[in-house]
Every structure is written in structure tokens, then in C-alpha cells.
Image 1: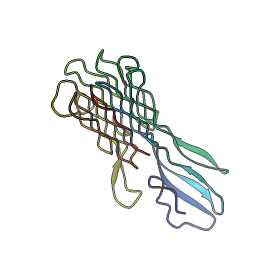
Image 2: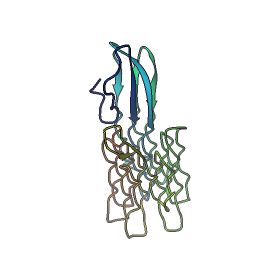
Image 3: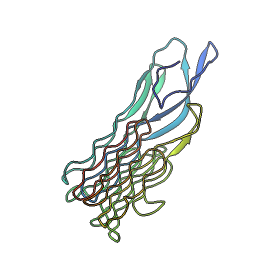
Image 4: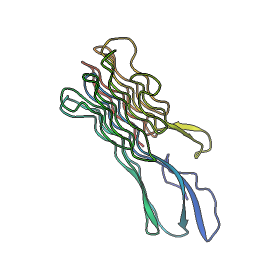
Length: 239
């Protein structure tokens, strides 16, 4: 069985009666927020197996990454869901990553597969992740003026430092170990380097007036880096 996309693969050869199929389904990452913002959360990450029936058809949807916020009136856009469905299985759906918090309006991170990071301006909370798919986004940090890191498939945002995106998880479903599902880094107002992305395709946070946040990496479900004041916010990576 082939043609299931980059993150839904590894099916190989099976007995004629049925297929015991391993799969990895990752949704689109969330977009970064606007203006000293939180990073986008990684798309939901589901790695398991399912019994399929020879001769049946199965529909596969691979979700795209959410757009970065373009004003302070909205968070980064939540990523799109990814799924596998068929007549003989319960639909498997991974949830799109939550968008990063913006200012002045939507300051908290959005909920999703992994949650988006919060804006720094009032230490705003990160969004929640989905159980068994990802982790929460980190809160913004008033001290240091750093947006919260987006949650990753393997850990929450801010786990490895203020504004750092949460790390993703490694899978060898394509034949070699690849880490996917990293959260986007939060933006910083105080200069220096942008906050680090989570391992697994998350984008790096922007720096006020000088450096844009970077996009999540396609085909990883990584979240977009948060946008700093005067620089665009970034787009979450595709699932």
C-alpha cells in the first residue's frame, strides 16, 4: 500500500487476509503570533498501527500549516487536521497545532494538537495540547520580553528555556530516524538571537526590528516562529 504521503507510510508487505499497518499521522503546525509573540504549536502527532482490509480504500488527508498572524487582533492560525479514514476503521485524526499569541488582543496561545505560546506582554498563558498528541505552549516571559515557545510532540514549550519551542519525537517509519513535531520559538523584544525552535521542524522566533520569525519545516508539522515588533510572524509547517 503506497501513496499515503510523507508522514503516513511504512506499510510494506502483509498477509493476504489483512494488513497490520503502521502509521504516523501529523497535522499542520500552528502559525506564529504577531508582535513580540508566542511561537506556533506543533501539529498533533499520532504514531500507532491499525488492521486494514485487503481491497478496501482508505482516504488520507495531510493538513497544511496555519498562517502567521498579520495583526495583533488575531492569533496565528491553527494548523489543519490530518486524518486516515475508511469504512472498516475508526477515523484517525490528528489536530492542527495552536497559533501563537499576539498583542494587543489575542495574547494567549491557541489550543491544538500542541498549544501555541503566549505573548510576553503580561506573561500570557500558552494554549493546551491534545491528549496523546502533543503538549502545551509556554507562557510569555515579562522578564526578558520573550514570547512563549510553542508546544511540541515530545514536551511543552519553554521546557528547554524561556521561549524555546518544545521538542518533537523521533520515528523511523520511513526507514531512518527523523524527528518531527517541534514547536516554534517565541519572539524577543530585547535584541540578540531569536528564541530557539523545538527539535523536529519548529521555526525560530523573530527579534524586534531586525529578524523575522522563520517558518516551520514542511512535512514535519513544526510550528512557526513568533513574530517580533516590526517583523512579520511566521507560518506553521505542513503536517
